[in-house]
Length: 447
Ligand code: SAH
Ligand code: SF4
Ligand code: F3S
Image (tube, protein in one colour):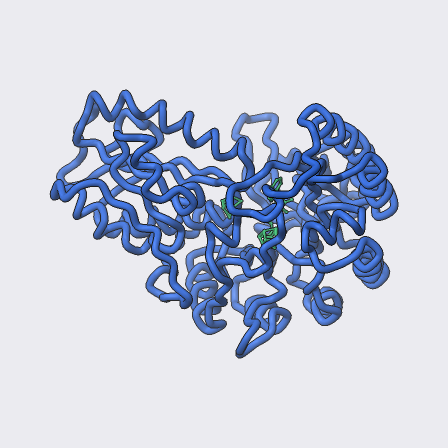
């Protein structure tokens, strides 16, 4: 191991799961920076290893255990190394994790990130192995505000937890009750990020449409307006919307607020009313479809993406066909699809009629095959169009310099250009569509 500079320690941090976890990892690094830790990409150089984990599906959880196994040997070689597990598996398993992995020093849940400096202090003083998984009903602002502005884009949590308890989902158990941050604190954080060079901000919550429910100072559309008004912010995104709560007010805002990115992620989960009811989603397939139609009628350029679960307990072949039919009818720009995975604590885990793994896997394949064509067709519709790209990176090879970025509708675009670009947002013309990206021309010729 290389010698650390005086007093500086190194942390190796690996993140699994969703943007919430990416955001939490940023906060973990923020708190660690305050106590003199810098990040390393080599676990063999680290004084502290943290796995920020996800338990949304069994596969995600298993990944964590195999990653932990990898670090066991390192810990045996260097007993001074501190090994910690954060995130949703930490919250779900708590002290059971210490039993399962006797070489583990620390387990801390998503609501205990701000305690990390103290927890590490305690462990360094050899006060034993620690578990911090307490959940509270209010938000302490000291937990936030430590994000860095790495590449012009940032994620900002506007709320935490979830109260929906969809029958398949572990998130309400791992993330606790839904609580919204105060709008002034969110605005403060985005303003600081903008001063540090952030151009695009994504507001994060499990169900952003219920932002402020139960005593809000502002509604979610009002919050979006306030964030869009902040100097330096050029694009505002948000995830995730819940179909039962998305409002006409929000849909209309897309016509009024040019900084709002032209994309809505609206997870449908299934096209069958019986399955939706068993999932406890609070809407029917036709209710969902009418919201998507409203979005597309008012704003034809908005891209709509969704999440789908196949093989929910009791899902019949006909019910699965209803999901395929919904896909073909609504022609999503893209989907994220998953095989149902039973999760501890959830209602659905106790349901009867579990669909065999091979059937789930076949359904997933069929669904993904059907969507692949739709995704490509939707992308091809953009060929010849002018789109705005917020730059994310550039390759450096001379003679083949290529820039990349994202359109407002969240597609990856690449275009060659040898000069210096005038701005961090440029207009290009789409020339070709591939399954996962677009190719474009700059400066735009023609149309
Ligand atoms: N709060 C967001 C999504 C959270 S989890 C929402 O409500 O949309 C992200 C996605 O994982 C879900 O939309 C769902 O499609 C999937 N998911 C959650 N639990 C699952 C499970 N037990 N098995 C398979 N997929 C699951
Ligand atoms: Fe899970 Fe449902 Fe909450 Fe989303 S809304 S996090 S799927 S319980
Ligand atoms: Fe996210 Fe996975 Fe937790 S999806 S909220 S990290 S269970």
